[in-house]
Image: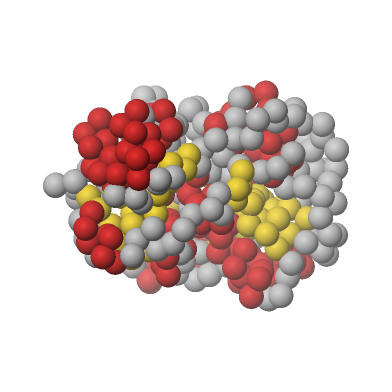
Length: 342
């Protein structure tokens, strides 16, 4: 059984349509941040407020700049391609650009795009397509070591934290692989498995496939999805947690997130030690030795002074390294992980 592999030909242009905010543009923002050498432009519809600080391009401008792949860098609600985007995307396909997207709606199911791509020879690359015939989980312990990012909610930094830790482990010469479980991570890494598109019974089995047997001193750094606290996405989070069989977890949190976003009910975020305990209780069903290696917090809304005070207080309360992965880096968590996993 093989994981999903994609081949995207750089340079990229990030397509933003008329997405209303950066939260919904996290795919494009993630690719631009982690693969800046590949991203040379962006395209938006009029009045789109999101700006990735990339050069604005027209179809002809993208041609002149040598763009090869258009990345649909948005995640609209429901994963559908808005109808008002299709004419512009069709023009891009007709001009011969490959188009890659990680939406629930397949590019290959959109007639206008298929016609344009067939005429120009462009590729339509649907990233959010899991392999066929995934197995159910068998729970067999696997060789190698694994760490999984878990969150207090969706979009609190699980992918960024995993990528930052992977980079830190590689910098130290530790054998490590980033295991992408969502469309943005797959576009960054070039391979992975879109866990949220897997039928529920096979989520844990897909997680086992994503992180196979490996050398005893090799770390798989696995990108988490959703949150055990989120009524909408707890199922995928639990399946990934059980199937990953992590030796360690990292809790990811946004300092401003005081309750679950995107749901009708009022669900306050519990104290972080409670969240860690719940995650460990579930993780230890398939790996009794799992421990928490630290807390990764998005503190971008705080001043440097307030960030340092917040993280210092949190670290004192939890007895774990607490960092902002972009402002501080993952070195303290890497130190803790390698010490306590040995």
